[in-house]
Amino acid sequence: MFRSTLFLISGLLLSTTLLAAPDGARLYERHCSACHGLEGEGGVGVPLVLPSFQRAVEDDFLFTTIRHGRPGRVMPAFTSLSDAQVRAIVDHLRSWAPERPQQAARPVRKPAHGKPGRGKALFAQHCAQCHGANGEGGHGTGVTFSRPRDLPVMAPALNNPGFLAAADDHMIKRTLMEGREGTPMVSFLDAGLNEQQIDDIVSYVRSFEEEPLHWQYDRDEAPAITMESSYDLQTTVENIKRAAVGKNFRIIRIQRLEDGLFEEGEQNEKQVIVYFCNFNFINEALSLDPRVGLFMPCRITAVEKADGTVELMAINPRYMSRLFNNAELDEACTRMHNLYESIIEEATL
Image (tube, rainbow, N blue to C red; front, side):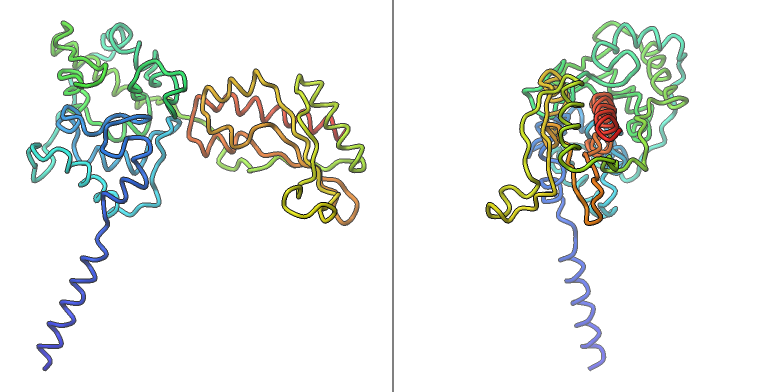
């Protein structure tokens, strides 16, 4: 009886474990396919199904890339996924390359023995056109194909803490020697470089670790810009309009916060939104990343509180830039943050 019960419990535990095993295909579809394509064919992100890519990268590279992402390059860090879930995604990626030989353990990789100084000159001549003068990556976020981008496949950022943590010298060297079939990345051997020159480039790329290009943002950045007005609600709203026009914005409309949420006459008259826009600026921001449309056009909300004081609130673009993980958008969001602050300050003086 005891033995039968033990077998039953063991079987139930095994079944529970099997049922709980992460589904890599589903996880990939949910977290990765929007950028890398449902079958890994690429799009916003690099193609993952390419045989040349599958041959060149180890599982550790894929795991670390998913875990740490690429700061400032749209690819987020998937810190909320468990190690088992990340491994399940990696296994799913490998299912696209059944011919790839399996390795029981990652082999020991020797660092490249090159001269970073020579590699810098070679990088400028052969790599910078696609990967950026300082290894910052190809221009354009590629969030959609309708956005400006230099190449049909976004050239990865090499001077990036996420890439440098994931890629070892062997992988970088192999990529340079073999190229990436199906992308603009050619074999540098075919381009006329020798192995020593390739080692020099690898050593230069590795030297980025000494001072990588970090995307700087304040982790304590508040999601909203707030300030109290010394005027009544109506005067404050007029001040906002005047200040926005003075900064070359066009007033779009004035509405109550609750318009469309409640029947006419039931809205709170003491909560007002001022919408305004500079079309040149918004077109520039949208060309960098269409997701900024989530908080466009610009708007400032004025709320009269129970004690009669009026508070102004606006979304903090610098906080949104952090969420979008897009360094190219960071400068535009900082400009917008400063404009919001100056308009609010002028309206409350």
